[in-house]
Image 1: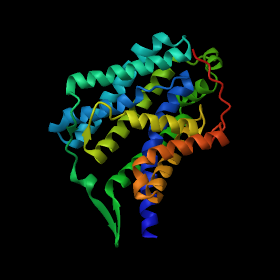
Image 2: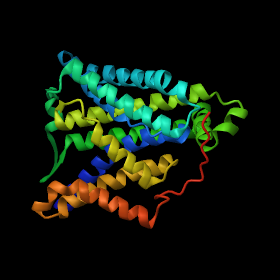
Image 3: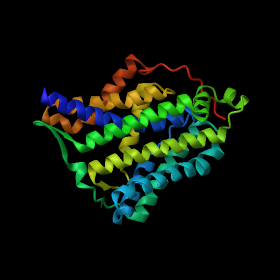
Amino acid sequence: MTTFLRYAIDAVSLGAQDGLIALGLGLVFGLMRLVNFAHGDLVTTGAYALFVCAGISFGFAVPIMLAVVIVLALLMERVAFRPLRDVDPMTLLVTSFSLSYFLQNLDTIIFSSRTKSIAVPAFFSSQFNIGTFQIPNLDIVTIGVTAVLLIVLRIFFARTPLGLQILAAASDFSMARLLGVRANRVIAVAFGISGLLAGIVAFTLIAQLGDVTPSLGVQPVLIGFAGVIIGGMGSLVGATLGGFFLGALTIALQASLPLGARPFRDAFVFGIVILFLLVRPQGLVSSSYVVERA
């Protein structure tokens, strides 16, 4: 039972991290039909911002990092994607790849390709004891922060005019614009929220790994994209559930695979994703969204 609880907590923690990435990607996709692969570079930028802020308190460094990532996300939308909003979705996809490649090389020029270590408070490597059962503090923080974020976003989308406008635009952009929804504002806010989510993921990754390279965000964004597909393209709830599903699947395979097969865990994960989509191509949550680009 103790072992099962240990794996269950790890699965929820990893699923929370994957769910935040998938939600950030799904939010932008719902509005623009854009799979923003440069989203992973927002995570990397957040990690490097923490590295630059190494000389100050971690409690002050994290808000600074979040601000930097949100500003970069807004600049990304304004400079790279807004001028191309009326073009073919494939062009937007190529733009996101190009932007990602540019940001990775920019990070390499500024910080070099060598791994940079980031001092993380000892709290995140400590454990919380319940009798003989130990829970890593990082898992508690990750699950807690994710839960609060999801609740706040749920309230924002359900109870605020701007949140309702974003959901309406994701459902039918053309009709929403005819009803007075301002496209520039809702898309900018969506990018800002995606930047916030990417910053939170950067924080959890650095607290877990303690170092950063220019390619740090590549794997998380691929996992997040798989989560969006599994959850159902166009569904924010589905994207979050897809991320949690992948987290649980990853931990389950880590626990059950023979030692010799564990280095190939991710290959098994994506193989199961392919099999799942063959059986249920619409994803976990069927979406009726008809997305119209502005």
